[in-house]
Image (cartoon, rainbow, N blue to C red; front, side, top):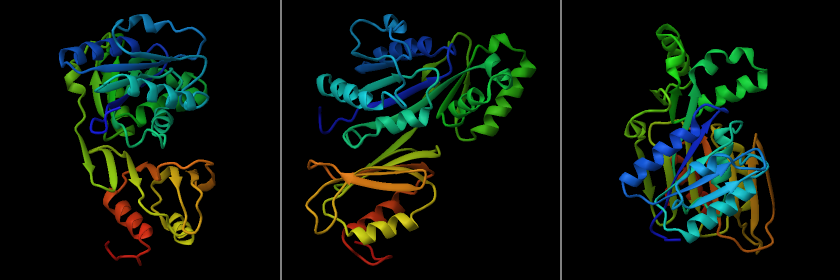
Amino acid sequence: MSKEKKPEINILSGFLGSGKTTLLQRLLKNEETRKRKVGVIMNEIGQVSIDSAAIPENTPLKELLNGCVCCTLSDKLEVQMYDLLENHNLDVVYIETTGVAHPLEVLDACLSPLLADKINIGTIISVINASGWSNRHSFKRPLQKLITEQAKHADVIVLNKVDLISDEKQEEVMNELHALNQKGKIVTAEFTNIDVNSMTVRKTSKDTAREKVHATEHLHIKTYVHTFENPVNKNRFEEFLRNMPENIYRIKGYIRFEGDPATFLFQYAYGVPYHTNAGIKMKELLVFIGDELDHEVLRKLLLQLEHDLPPNVTC
């Protein structure tokens, strides 16, 4: 895997039958036109992959069957992603999720400590069936919540099959989606027939010798990857956790503490931190996922922590 080149990872989400695979085919054709080398990871709930036949034979493909990458197969996603990147000089990878996957949990699975500083997070695309969205209140509550979450956390929403609803209903749906996801881009489509270039989300990346930032500039869900050069004071780290910004909802990675040779696997989710001895020496980095993360504030806090500096002292 090239150290300079970081493949772009795009997540294709959406409920069953919304048109994800058809859209994926259009995206792959566009990548071919752009002469970018692309890989695909396809996830199916069942034991047999039906949609993989839609992928061109020369496209590197990994299949994850009999489960969902956002929960039961998250560890397998890490292995397959690493293998895909290690053995192919890719520019971009598309992950087509199952229809019941939560996009943020898929994002979380992609950002394993082994992969986080080797990839750039691109775009979360959610395909929404226009008539299905209109009728979602007739579904069971967990399903209603899932479809809503898929729309809420998308960078780009493809509102598909708009030909099956009236103009008035389409306007109503568009207003609902805008209210739910004010920063996402909404593109309407029939048979996912869209101008793929209209889905482009402008991104920025900032690299220094000590930290890497992968952020979608105008979207609320952002990630920050901080690499440590030194062990940190355990008490100071615990203080950092108690006082860190509330908009951080997930942290994971590896860390070392002063006076202890061990490397610890660190996890933070739903307000609860915990760490265990990793048993092996790993690159010391933490992956942060949150809402409207301020990367500069995080960077300064973590550098102060690493160099054991008092608050408000810049290193």
